[in-house]
Length: 471
Image 1 (cartoon, rainbow, N blue to C red):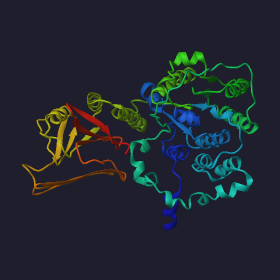
Image 2: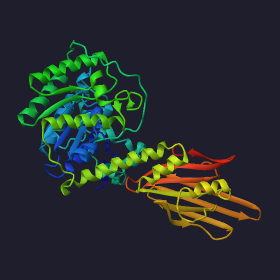
Image 3: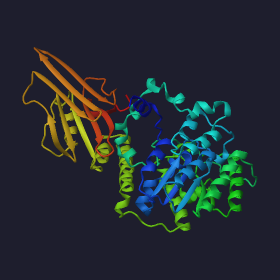
């Protein structure tokens, strides 16, 4: 029992690579209609929630960070032992890899999730050099000292969120980085990919054809180089040998067709963000539905996991709107648009100021007067609960627990001296550093996230919002 606990606690739980397979093993038989393979260019750029919400396609992304073609091949073998997809999409970014062995992190992510021990052995043999093989095959050598790095994602409760309970391999990237429009001229030249990459690229195509599963190969939009474009020409020529559709979305034509905005649609130079992936996923949907006629599962009870997954993705995007709100009006609008939001209002000081009181009254519709030394719970514009004392208290102490969120407010009056202590902790992180103003702690009940913590203070004739979420 002790050995089991140690292994369970210290072994790796990366969301890319390892967790994708863990979740895939739990799915109902023959529930995955569209299997998507590749690297982070697959799991950040192709939105499985969008495919289900708009087309009823039950898709799943089995991919790992910079996953080489040899690992993708063994993932495909493993996947076909548990599901019979109607179609497969291969994202081909890693045809451009210039090496035969990955770094430590990618070796772990792209191998340790495989359940079949012999297949894992085969995959590792291709992933590491002979002199390092034992260090990876005997997995404990990689994680035995990780107790010094233990974090929230090492505990089971961390995976009780819908993000992980209904994980379909897709990870939303909420960053935005501006770029100049990419010069995506496709050269007429070809450049061979590495022999090892080509070997497994062909094996993936051949395995799909052996199993009579339609395959399409795509390249996601990103800041592509001329060298990579030449390799994609070579990869496309190989696909043509097998009569497999190959679409490289890095061209002026496709940038225009997808309406890709390089100022707003990219998270970084390699990945689309939560706005850009919707445009690209629509193109993927049109491509795959032109090849295969998928059944619409949106009203099928067998596919509730996809419904819950879509809800989670949608609400996490709504959470982002709350995080991005710059003014009180924007914040109020974002909160009102999401019924899953609960707002805790911790009033430390300044609520007697008419400007502050008027501002607070805009956050809810009740005739509740906010007073210093109190905590209020607001849902759908209504104060549903409060922790306060009537009159002028000599002493106030309030503790609120919300999962791993803890709030405490204490006020003591000794003669003319008033002592206050306000604390907001989430996952052991302190969010309050100044004992003044009013704090808003905005939570999402469904996604089980603390979305934003901000402080309201009066400056002159207006209330200033200071974000405290990044403290």
